[in-house]
Amino acid sequence: MAGTKLPLLGMTLAELRQVAAQSKLPSYTASQIADWLYKKRVVSIDEMTNISAAGRASLQEQFEIGRTEPSSSRKSVDGTVKYTFPVSGSYIETVYIPASDRNTVCLSSQVGCKMSCLFCMTGKLGFTANLTANGMLNQLMSIPEADGITNAVFMGMGEPFDNTAEVMKTLDILTSSYGFGWSPKRITVSTVGAKGLKRFLDESSCNLAISLHSTHHDDRFSIMPCEKAFPIQQIISLIGKYDFSHQRRVSFEYILFRGFNDSPRHASSIALLLKGIHCRVNLINYHPIPDTPLEPSSLERMESFRDMLGRQGITCTIRTSRGEDIQAACGMLGGNNLPTKHTLKP
Ligand code: SF4
Image (cartoon, rainbow, N blue to C red; front, top):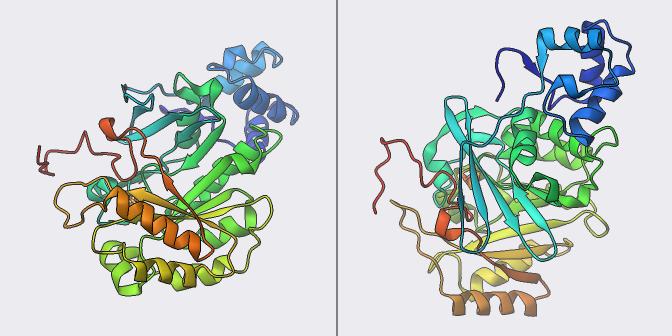
């Protein structure tokens, strides 16, 4: 997201100490820079007025803030706004979701995605690049609603734990006192299950969302190729070792597909799989994308599925779709701007 100079935005305090040393500035300058970047949110080094003019000039030789404005936006009838940021010769999308009790930003962690989930438009784009912490924080800081954001979810383009190091850096900056100072409760990271999950569970206190969609190995593999490398049973065994009964929460996302995963038998298998885990299940309406055999369940089916889970002791809600009319809802990111090699039906 930045030019030839290195972006300061996205650096941890330890990295900013190296910057200070490189620029021959006292080490306490690192905390001052962090304060300007993450609390005061300046857009130029010149605004860092408690650093001497010579010090700022020295910083400017090698570094820049590293902020990039979105190149376009679309607003939904429900108030959701989708932003496009140019990156790595391609683009990423970021979704701002206002609600009565919170304003959430849905962040992308990669340009495209390698996971190829059958129901997801981003999966169809393939993978272009990992985002850096700079690219992730920039989404949160450079949209017009930035000052009113209360929550962040990593549910946009990409699999966060296929880019674990940069996602963990971003979480560190968001939750540390030198950075944004947010409570980890304000952040949720969503994953299909990838190798970085354990590191996240060990090193972060942020909330976790698992894309479940099927409890059965073969069925899940048929729509989520990641099931081969990291089967759902393995994910559940790992999660079972951590405590989600206090501050930290885990939820399971379940898109209902007609005739595939929406029967009473499927509801019972979820209750069995999640037995003993303090969690919630979010049922999601499928937004059909081209060239997939999957179809959405009806609302009646969703409601009866929710009730079946409830009767079996699982806290379950139907998640309201937001921004469907601007292709900003779950699984739709990347859908309005596909390269021409992907043929879209009207
Ligand atoms: S659902 Fe998530 S992990 Fe799967 S292809 Fe889409 S962006 Fe990637």
